[in-house]
View 1 (cartoon, one colour):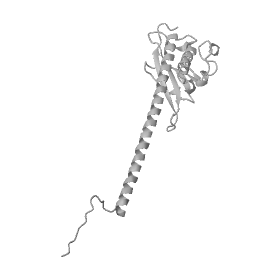
View 2 (view 1 turned 90 degrees about the horizontal axis):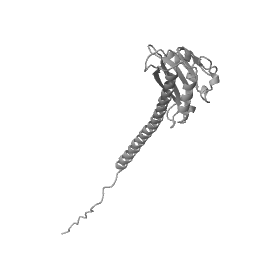
View 3 (view 1 turned 90 degrees about the vertical axis):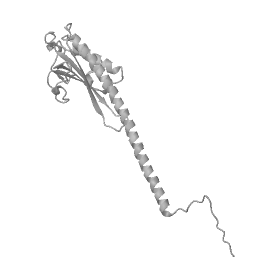
View 4 (view 1 turned 60 degrees about the vertical axis):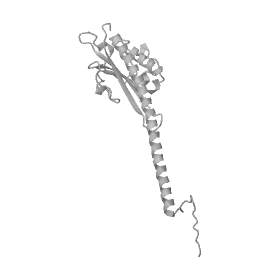
Length: 212
């Protein structure tokens, strides 16, 4: 009688077939694609957050500069040095945070109310009109000089448009003007993923009783 002995191979894995190898490689490829997509999405979000934060900072400083300018405009009223001091104040405010080079223009205007935006006609870069004075960045690249303003308080040379000289502003407290100052800054992309844009921020204040 012949006995057959069976040999058991414990722990031995089944041989890998070509189909098994193909599935594994395909899974690895899908995983790599998913990883690349996730990394791209994360990078986009991080860069986007950086640019948004950068733009927010410019927006914040533009508000501060416009508020400081409007405060001066409301206090000095019809004084011939009003716009001179408005521009000097805006310049100092932006220069203190290294943003003067980003300035595009400053608009001094008559607002309809305490939160009134500039008239649309005043914000047309190449054809402003209406109750406003539009000063380009070149008018602020150096401290504005008193000699560059006439007896009415308007700039003799350098302004893009002027139709709201200090001498015509109403300081009578029964119907005093609301004077507004808009600051327009050019904002670049620090990551290069987005195109350059502008930030326009304005502040409005009513002429004070002490305004001249």
